[in-house]
Length: 76
Image 1: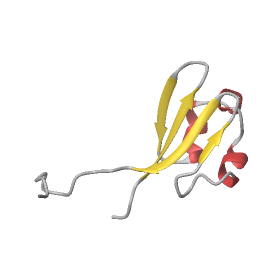
Image 2: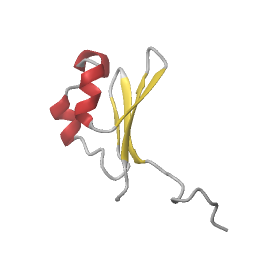
Image 3: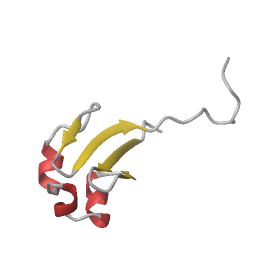
Image 4: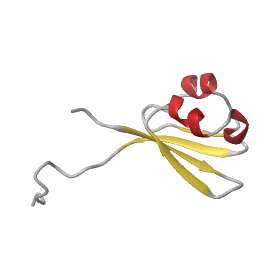
């Protein structure tokens, strides 16, 4: 299984952090007005590769979820 992307949305006025698996998922919970931009804008904004998008209402970042290896044993 490849890396799992996570999109972090920090709502500036409400000091609230939400985490999503896709850009489309953001707009199932929040409205474009709450985010400060729409789906098409975010899709073209360059979130991949660790990019960050700032709007007047939110800071949106895409990153990779870090997990431990299968088996639960620590690697030395």
